[in-house]
Image (cartoon, rainbow, N blue to C red; front, side, top):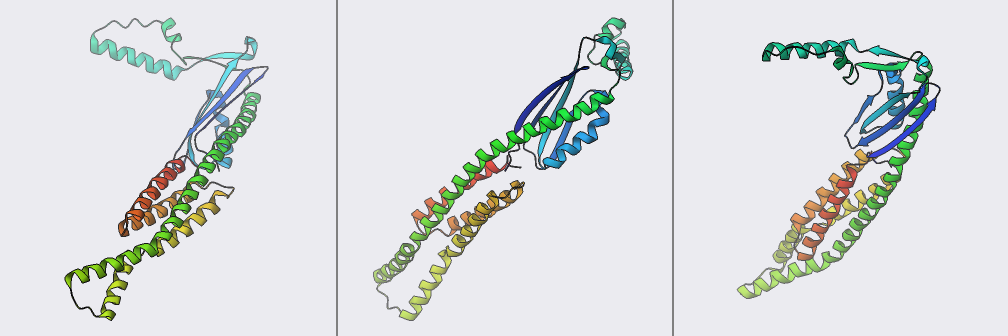
Amino acid sequence: MQSMTAFASHEAENKLGKLSCEIRSVNQRFLELSIKCPDFLRASENTLRKLFSQSISRGKISVFIRFYPNDDTSLTELTVNHALVKQLNTCASSIENKHQMMNDVAVAQILNWPDVVVQQPSDTSALSQFSVELTKTCIDKFINSRRREGLEMKNILQDKIDTIQHLTEEIRTYIPQINEHLKSRLLTKLEDMKLEVDNERFEQEIAFQLQKIDITEELDRLDAHVKEFNRVLQIDEPVGRRLDFLTQELNRESNTIGSKSASIKTSNASIDLKVTIEQIREQIQNIE
């Protein structure tokens, strides 16, 4: 089991400079991957995306790869981002025309704008492969982080599902008392009204009333869902969607138990069930 929220970073150096990789993720229904890296590494982006898709199935993942060149200028070159310069010049001209201001933007000011001048290696082929290896190492650290948090979440879920099983067993013990109380209450009403009652007809009415409040079927389904939940917790693959579906089914049965409740005990137990299931649902939102 893996969490969808995690963080990892890694950096390494070679003769051209230092590369750093940082990975962050939050919960998301599907896999949403964003990679921000220097332009000279764009050729490796597809390879990097495949690395993530091979080991991660869900989550909103942000990847930041940065390059810090060393002091040997013979190994790097400066290039101008002419597209950005053109956009800056257009903006300056727009301000000049609309506000009747003099366009006195100097070249030096343009050069100071972020990302106008880009320093990159003269030969990027080796660095591209270096960035892939760096990202592989960072992904391993990232997945280990997700698994550590996933283990903590698994323990929490196991505790919550055990609570549901305990509450289910507790509710079962109330059923004989509830049935006997219903029968006794109907008999008391009849005695108070001093009416003659046909025993066979009375038994039929008792059976009808007991059927209306019977929650045995709902408890059996809760037991089945709990058993399946425990099985899914042990699967070595992404289980977030399965657990989400099972949580919906648990909630459905607990709602029915609450609506059929004929005792304050079952009503309180139903509320405890709903609270526990909601706590499970909140945890599952972060599970891959």
